[in-house]
Image (cartoon, rainbow over all chains, first blue to last red; front, side, top):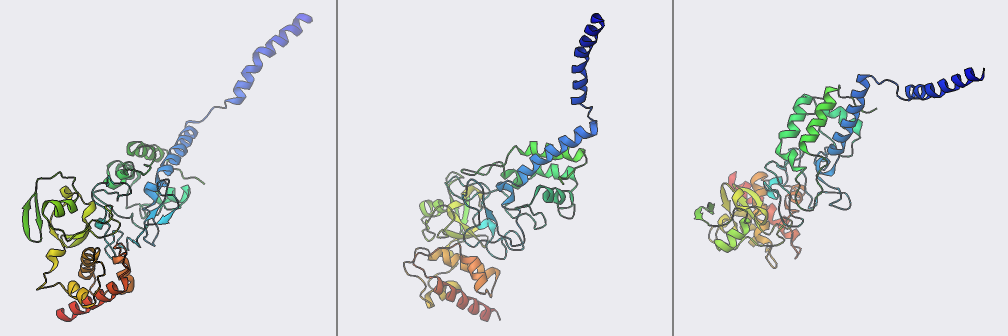
Length: 198
Length: 154
């Protein structure tokens, strides 16, 4: 009897870890892995899109560029009563190119620049938008410049003004990650069905 | 490199990164455009490139392509631009340091908008600073120049 009891206890001790191991690591479906990786990828894309280097120029229909982020202290609209106007390049007011050259000024607080310098189209609003709002916008061809998500990833990897976000000149914090990494995050997220946060 | 200023072609031997303002003032002795802030925030250095205003203190000369016009090329004492004439008529200048830039910005504004209201003037001219505070006279002179230009083209 004692021997039987001993064998039972031993068997229990051997089998219990296996039971708990099974209970703890419920088999994960490949689809769920993909969804969780997609959500992680999107959260990184959102970090980029909502970063001041990007969002400061993806502004609403007030057409006012923003000055925000660690480089600027308090958040404000662009100084000197500057407006991009409905043209988003300042045709109606002062052309952005009046002060913004094709490259960043090396002077402290000098104007940043890129071969193209303009506000993003008004429907591509990112300024103070939630992750869900930007996610839905970037998937919507009527609000993303008529692009597929593959084209969005390509745009991030190729566009000069987009690239400025990672090379913003002296004294400005660049957007996180890199253009290549961000394009890869978009591709991963898109290939998993481009889920948006709830 | 070659640059065209006020209708004259110049050969300049300078670094492409040199600001246009330095080339104008130090290499070509065209001293109408003034150095104010050096970071495109005050407008004293404003010139036209292909008719568009540009802050020459922050514009690398290697990036300039096209015709450069400075205050010296906008008009002459004998044949003033309408904006220059209105500036004299309204005695806008006090110390005068910012006025070349003010006039160049005003001339560009009237090129785009021949009948600017106060809001349009505020938008176009707010990035041209005047420490003497001649803003009311600037506004009046712009309106006068606009009217003269409209009357002449009518």
